[in-house]
Image (cartoon, rainbow, N blue to C red; front, top):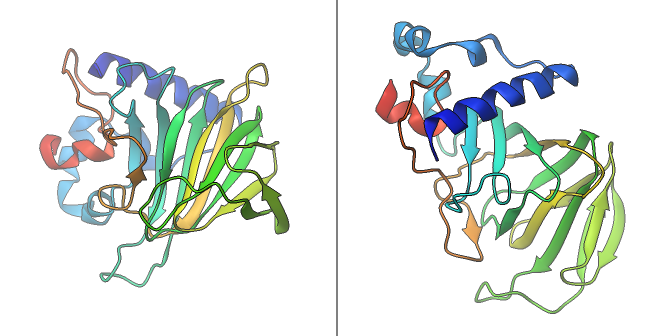
Length: 224
């Protein structure tokens, strides 16, 4: 991805979240100089990869296969006492987050507003393939059974609990508008806890065609 594209996505995300009255922490608006000035104070943020997170999953086409995320809080396994994490995400119509599961993390995916979120689910087999068995999930605490790959629609206000080893793919429903998606989970580790069904990249390879307006969480080790 080009840095200019990432900057544009961030600006659009700021406007969208503000329109939904979803406010980010003060440091979310820091430019590169403020990050460098506060480098000695932000190890908690950088080590837990809080903040801006944009990926095209290596597709080269963010609008078709990509995701905007902002990690608001996160614990670190074996380091601190915080056992939970929270993210806000933006999902466009027909913008796919590809099929994956987590070995360690259980999470609730919540439609916080906007359009409808489409989710497709599969149980994983012992060798991490797609099972042909019915999927049992909780939707807002209600026991729900769907066929493998069946489209489950989350309307604004609805949520689903994703257990470990549950493959899921999601995207915004065509014609319903952009979706603001929340995630509340156990500690998050996007470096080691994503099992994508296809071989893809979690973080983008960036071409630096302009200066970043804000660093991504995947930038901390190289830009700060």
